[in-house]
Amino acid sequence: MRVLEVYAGYGKLEILHGVSISADPGELVAIVGPNGSGKSTLLKTIFGFTTIYRGKIIVGNWDLTRVPPSKKPYYGLAYVPQLGNVFSRLTVEENLKLSKIVYVARAKSGQLGEEAKRDPDRMFEKKLQEIYEMFPILYERRWQKAGTLSGGERQMLAIARALLMEPRVIMLDEPTAALAPKVAEEIFRKIVEIARSGVTVLLVEQNAKRALEIADKGYILVQGQVAYEGSAKEILAHPELGKLYLGLLPKA
Image (cartoon, one colour):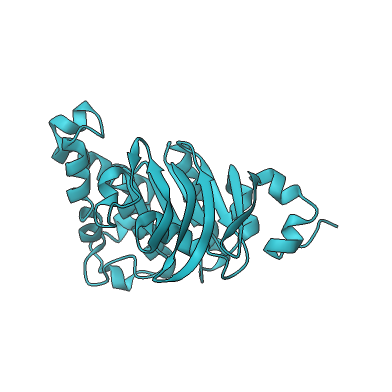
């Protein structure tokens, strides 16, 4: 996917000033930077929740710049916001099965291969079982209302529901915010697993150091612009970048 020289914001308030990023299939890209630098706004812009003044958003062979948020999942783009990402009154399984509409539509269009095109219902059920294997706690909780889950379990449910649409790209906005360290680490492990399965991951994360440790590539946003881009290892090892932009202490 590619974001090309995008200027965007809310109404007349421009937040992003010529941002360009790219991510290959299966690449885990960390988007980090100080508070208020436009990280979450970038994900919202890609998904269509802001006003784009200039620039383009390309996913696969499609120009999705003017495609509304309700249609973006049908092109293989998934977005998991930090808050309000599950339906509390529905059970875990009911939440997951909401993805079937998008999955079946994409399958029938041929985006998910011949087998899925021939029998999308069966292939969705197979995909659901794969998700339960990836997130066994969701299988255990499948008949519980989502509102009764812990914070970490809700994040897993939101991510799992997005994965059930079999996206090309999944965007995660601060998935470990307010989670206990042990639970956050479990979420990070799942994110790595998702990328290794071939899905492109765009990760906005408050824990910049940990995000870069698991990422392939990183972008540092400062005041709505890309201040630096490079391999995640390069950013972590740089003697000044972490101190200047990410609040990281230099190695002793």
